[in-house]
Length: 139
Image 1: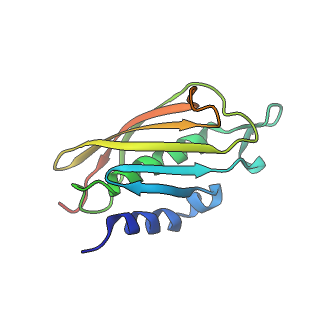
Image 2: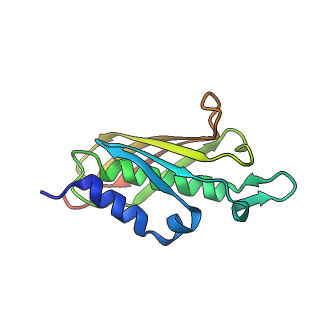
């Protein structure tokens, strides 16, 4: 049997925009995933403040959610985003790594449901939260 966590890791590492953003898969398994994105001046959305662009934050959240789905014991294969709602709570602190954590909490025959949080060094105050639905492919 193929280890789904290995496949998920290989998939994420092969995505060109994930490489461009410096996304690193730190933990994955059983419907949970954690990905980090180091601070990078090329990703600044507001040059006056040095704050990372919200598009980079949305990308790490989306990628982390997909990884959580792929690693879920009931998910047989790949996935794609159906719907993703992101609530931006505050700007990430310039200079700090952003970490996303996602949990796939429910799967039907065709749809997986996921929640995620993005944070910088202040884990008590999220940068953004996300909830979404993803395809369940291969069943």
